[in-house]
Image (tube, chains in turn orange, yellow):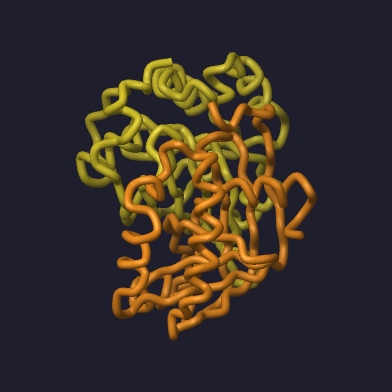
Amino acid sequence: MIGTPEQDAFISRSFAAIASTVRVDGTVASSMIFYGRDGDRLLFSTVQDRVKGRTLARDPRITLCITNTNEPNSFVTVQGSVEAYLENPADRREALYRYWDVVANLHPGAAWHHGGREATEQLFTQPGRAIYAVTPVRVSGELLDPPVLLIS
Amino acid sequence: MVECRAMIGTPEQDAFISRSIVAMVGTVRRDGGPSASMVGIARHGDSLLFSTVASRVKGRTIARDPRCVVTIINENEPGSFVSVEGTVVAHLDNAPALREAMYSFWDVAASVHSKSNWHRGGADSTRKLFAEPGRAVYQVTPVRVSGWLLDPPVEAVRGELAP
């Protein structure tokens, strides 16, 4: 379990987060990632030599602010430490796809519905891609949205 | 959309900022690690405004290091974001004029965010909350802008933006 039962449930019905890492000058760099839950770790894919990959190679500390378009006033922040799988293991990619196969059904506008597994696999197997696994250290956030009907 | 003469990033990034009301604010912790949380964000000319409690994590980290990053998201456009890195000034007098500027922005921009607290009738409770003791207005001056915008905005094309 990651955080409280409510935070844990929010994480399990979401797949987008703003990832913040530390630049060499000590400032914070942020960008959007799509994660998949793998037990108590959160996985994502990015290119090793882009900002996220470079900053994480230097400092594995990361903060994920998880957001959900169905519940726009809520968020869960997961501070943690990243382990990089630079060999881009197929079984970790598969874990991502399995997660999105389920969770994307709660998000009618999700990109996963356009191209899905095949298009994503093509992107995620490009040279330089790697998988990053976040182990949570501290969890916070606010869940302000009233219960919503997730599938209309 | 709110008319703004000034520019923060590209015209497309500017337009996205002008139709969005939520952001993740990233600041630097004492130990150098990244801290981040969600705020209501309002565009004010070529600066960005948000409110928080000066003694909470965001306020304390900013008091120590004014460098921050504001990553703007929009539930109508899943997958799109604009990240504005800059320096932040704390208005510890809780700047009434800047608070009014935030409310004016949300009065317009929140109309396309039917699930937002502001749109749902939370405007009065927001005004009450932001006037509480210890609250301050934070103003971000952009230094660097980046991001990813899906073109065209998915929901806008479907005509679902209007509440």
